Amino acid sequence: MFDLSVYAGKHICVAVSGGRDSMALIDFIFTHTGEYGVSLSALNCDHKIRGEASARDSAFVADWCARREIPLLRFVWEFSGAKTEQAARAWRRSCFNKALDGGADFVATAHHIGDNAETVLFNLARGSAVAGLTGISDGGRIIHPLIHCTRKQIEAYVAEHGVSFVDDETNFTDAYTRNKIRRNVLPELEKAVPGAAGNIFRLSRLAAEDEGYFQRVIDRDGILKITPYGAEIKRCDPVVFKRAAVKAIKHFRRIDYTGEQLARLVELEKNKKFGFLGLTAYGGADKIVITQTEADSGEIAFFEYCGNDFYGSRLIVSDNPEGARLKFDADRLPATAVIRFRRDGDKFKKFGGGTKSLGDYFTDMKIPLWLRGRIPLIADGDEVLAVCGVEISDWIRITENTERTAYIISDDFRSYL
Image: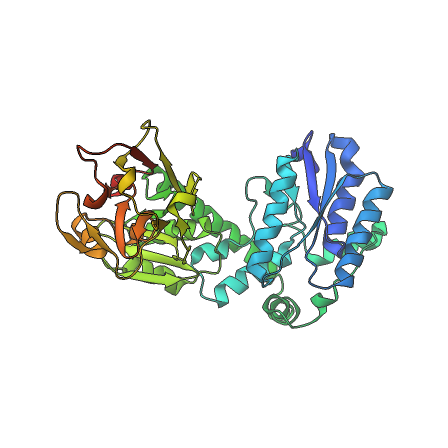
């Protein structure tokens, strides 16, 4: 089926659903482990989407592995939210990472040449960029040994070697877009153009080579920079910029981008913003910044806060000056003060200066739009007493009468100005 010698001496953990393809993959590796000194384990992900049927399939995998003394990692998706395809992918990837962290050199999935064609056609139809034509490629330690195999080859192996498997009944319905492509589009395409799936595979490899070149350019020229608060993309040639944007979007675990969205990012003007896929892009003079769309993170009473992280932003209030960026008179802080992010109507009395809206203050300080909603504030009502990492208000400044000094240790947001 494939050349296992390239993994000689390695530990491969096979993702097994119980279906025909994954059972063929693990059976082949199990049969040949002795020849190449390959260590074999398996993992099974029960999404609990099909109820008893899902549990049945997982039990089948567990029994098959137990009878062959193959170590098995079993994962059950205990998730109360909407079980979307995107969420399921993210969960499966987390399971793969646990297997890799546990000692596996590679996690192998059973995607084959038809799955690759299905992915390319799906991406093409929904308007993805050229990167969507790369199909299914090995991603570091996630490998796809059967990607050169056709469905017929896998079925022939299963029949010849008597490999047992279970069928997922959802694969035989048109309830999902990918099922429609697999069941209706690809068969008709193969009738019209014999070998179409193979030709699509070759196209996807050429596209992957091109994308690999652009990724090297992006890395070499520092086009993309990932920060704790977002992804910064330098303005550059649109062909390179779009590739960097795809990489940035994937950093946020989004994959359902479209070519139209990438074009919007290229054209995003300074001081404008664009929301998509739960992300927000902000236009700058020489770059754009993509961040998670701001959410209402609530607030914490200042005198109850005892952490070092406020919704992803480093924040410590201490009587120890080591590492501090700001200091203030602790006795001048109202008992009703809270820690929160910005809100409409906020105002700020500058150190030694007049009062203005927080938005105007941010503008004067040239704090970029994308950063403003991510700076922790100490506030009392709509009066901002400290813009952490930037400046304290005149209300709580140190004076000759100060008896207790407190220090704010936080990210240096001025470094982003």
